[in-house]
Image (cartoon, rainbow, N blue to C red; front, side, top):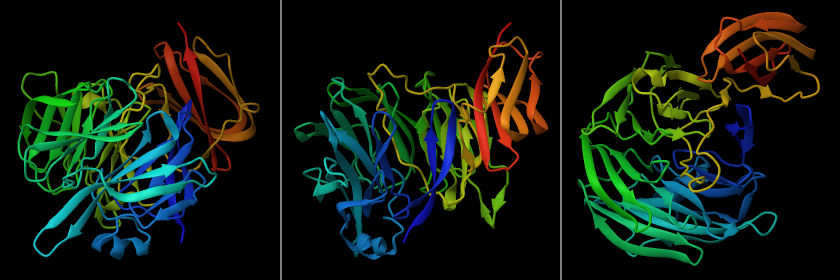
Length: 454
């Protein structure tokens, strides 16, 4: 059984969405990893793990053995865990080896038992293989069901994993090294945790850690050298259920929280943490389902992607998350996918401490799932740079031309039915703009960057 999924790609000029048939489907349990140049290496749904050629690895099935896994995994829909219940990290100094961390739970007669497990993969062979799986990562492996995240150690090689314990205020700590896992003593800080719900993440610079739970938002400082949490702050907010999201802004200042029908912004620079409402559900329904706000994930284009609840095929986007208040520009249903989407993989900041920026705001988001192509030889825009007037030529007949500023605001829409047209930006400020061209066959798009000079 193969499953059609929409695949995000972030290339030099644009954000692309493609269709891809996969060997298995996903529920909320979802993790993936690419190499340093962006080539897909692995993806994992809690039951099976596949390589970048969409082949299940040797020994790559049968994860999460237990009552839920044994019942759900044969259906090929993925393990029914919550958001952020799986994470793939590279084994330090070993680029062809990865650790796969995941949370297994068992519905026992009187309680739900959840544990942090891990596996290791080896990609030295063409197909790749799983060396072992379902190993306990902690001596006392009981943790909450959600919020699995990591941050680089100050040595920029190893990784810290911080995981909340259930029904206490203790946090488990693991250091992932080239020699294996090192368990550190738990830290007790802040309020007690409950079983599940919400998200956790580190700020892009690694100095802060936050958890958004059914009790509210907890924000703490973090020492990447010693792995210490300290200076805990709390903001009370009772979300509508357990499927809600949170993440930091790229500039480390703001935290965004989703609560089904609302999105809030929290300014961590303020002395007191406060909620600022920045978006409310606009009432749109799809086939009888409300298209609400769920899990959040930062993109390499400096935007925040918000999954819709109920596994619908829409993605909301916070276009300018570094801006305070409603200027952050929440666009509901900015992307429509061809397949359902329950959530996203959670990614730590792999670029922390490197020469690469955390994200690139010059990328443009193009909505839709049709093919985008480069057409380097056939599409020309000239002069570029220009003081206002641009000519566009192509061997293929164009149907429309849209121009966006660097904040993804559309400033021009022009209908055409020819392979040569002109656009004028004489009324715009100098700077970088993006031209989005649709072609007559309605199956191809192209995006180009242009520069407007004084």
